Image 1 (cartoon, each protein chain N blue to C red):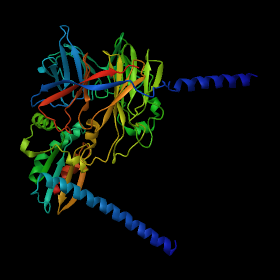
Image 2 (image 1 turned 90 degrees about the horizontal axis):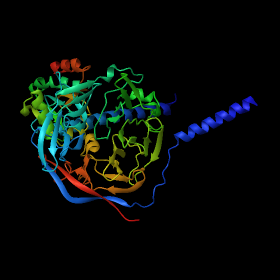
Image 3 (image 1 turned 120 degrees about the vertical axis):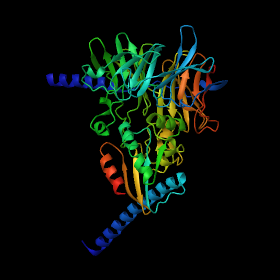
Image 4 (image 1 turned 180 degrees about the vertical axis):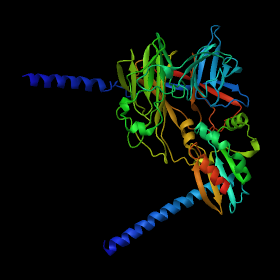
Length: 152
Length: 382
């Protein structure tokens, strides 16, 4: 490979890696925007957890997510349920027995429009103003997530 | 000579096959003579805190004593509300159980035969339940145990897409989504997918209707499986959400295809998920009182940064309704004002078409009410 090709390759790799890190920065910024919207006093320079539970996701994934609520709140953290219909959220948390004051009602769907969640529940672990872990919650991932939460 | 004859026969067969796959294109008029117009009448149902003013399944019912009711599945719950349309009062809530001897899991939709005969489809169970008005399950058809060559997934009967159970002689026809695994779709041709079960409860056999998606239904990594199905006046209808075609059959075996295209929206245009949602024919609905059909058209929605993907699906910013005569000839297409109605909240009575005003993007939206606006059908003299 001649010198020009090597330089070209290095430039390409640099651009690619910058793009990747720009995407991460953008995602972090959007996640923090959502947190600050619902909890302006959240201290993200220490440990913080965000649990987002869309009610249209897979049923068993939602069931698994609920088991994490006590730990999330204790860390400290936010439990967000995004849905246009406040009543739907209320009816759901009454049905499963979650205290209303533990839940953030995202009726403007900021969690969706900021792309911090898709259709299934997601957990995001933050430490020192960085997202150190983010994953969809499901039957296959719950043990890993519980471990990550314990280590936080 | 024999070889020439063989080739000639093959040529004839090939022409015949091609002809049966070509959609019959009805010559559509260049100008339309019909439209829907807002009436003065609205219906406003007051709802309590347990009821959500959004539904994927609502249908009117006229009782033997001529009272008009609206059966309404609240939100994504297992509660079927029964409203008296004449007095705008909630008469009853039918709380269908999830678990236990009268349990159905999560309701996906229902079909009202009479007050004490309500068919219910479940989100994940491959069973059809028949319930009475006290939510007691009278009977269950467990078609998962029926002989079947093609796997019949959990059926769906709901008005959101107008996928409806059909009854014809001794058969039950159940529309179902053919699985959610895109990996499966990629290894199948869309025309080979089946999505309506033909259930014979006496023989305990579940076959499928010989109708699939159009052969160009999937492209550019977009694999929709959305459709509508119903039986009306003895005919079988299939609406394709992402194709201009409608399929019709008199006997569920031989199908004719009609092209019914919106003048405002292009459902064949694929859009990246990040940018928004493509246009689609959300549902085809018969109006038995005026002997016409409505084909709802969700228009393309792009670059809405303040709305989730779910918002775009549930509350399309813009939609229109194509009006068709009894032969599926287009006689009109009415465009509706932006962000005013919830087009999935519809029902039809002898008065006309009602559309829900309970759209969260409508400034007049109120969570304590379920509001409907009446539209009248007009046809200009030719």
